[in-house]
Length: 447
Image (cartoon, rainbow, N blue to C red; front, side, top):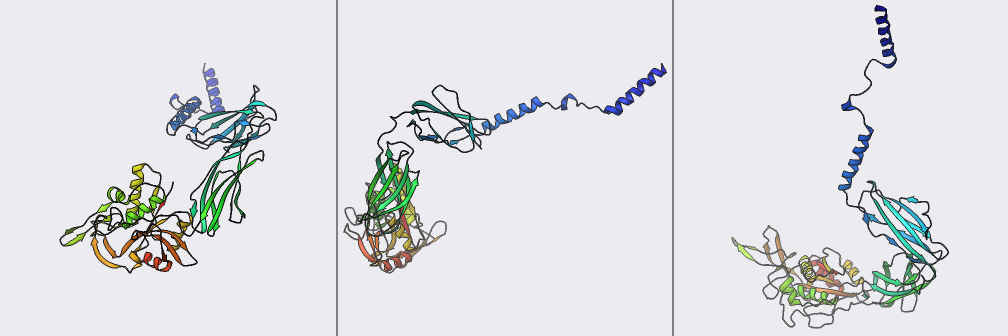
């Protein structure tokens, strides 16, 4: 009996030496469970999905759904939402055949030539994000000889049809229809002698900013579209380059006078140039921010001229305002009528920088002095937050509408004059007065 016990003890000791005497399995509470890890990761992904917007279309486009045999078809597969990075899988087939082997790529752009015979063709796109979301799109394409029709232009638009000479930056957009997409575009212009200058060629965009170096004269802007079969069509529009934009002056003393309303009258001049039907008096009474004066302990307090008109332009004893105030009046009007146009103060610019706006076809509301007389400080006051304001005698506002470098002159729609034709002033003196009144200006931007 003792021998059997000894044999058992030896056996146990040998087992411990071979396998180790410590317990090798973990208690149930800490045992690793691969299925629970997978479940945790799945739950984490589900939680992450809740923190991101759904994966959706963000401008997925196909170049054509009616193709000629062997025509190249392009897809731009832009998406949004989900969680990047995205992976794009494309497959295709004709009629009732099986789907092709998938092409997996990181790029959202895909192109393929359709079969060289008539058929119904399909392209399938699957977009996968890193959370496991999938967006699927199927494009049906008809391949036949009826896909082609004549390429022709529908429309062409210029940011302005009249500009001042110099280096112009003109926005051009054109629309074509027919032919066999995709199109390529060439942008050019012709001078009065018929000489063509190509600015952009082989572009896939139907709009572009063109940089032109012009002198006064008549020009023709041309956009040439070419389809995938080599057919071409042109869209053209006249561009007039002149020393003076076609701006009509308004006198602040006409009809219902505004004795101190040169600023809102200048704004009305610009708005009429952009074909808005609003009067100087409507702007003064309904949209112009105004502030008034008061005395506290014999100290004069009043508005900040940059943001409020000091007084009321209907009255002779009032003062005026500067560019941010006029931009606010314009934007109040635009918001009221639901217009996408906007006005912006452009203070501190050198005078020659203002000419850049004229070269884009934009008149400039600019601060100067009456009859280009000397200015001097004639009054001061404090704003409620303690800022000291200086009022310059002879302060005035007008609209810069053109220039002539050869004669050193500028053309100005001046509310002090009763002629609709802009006045011609010495450029050097006008620039001096502009600098004196601290380089205030404002511009209206068509959207």
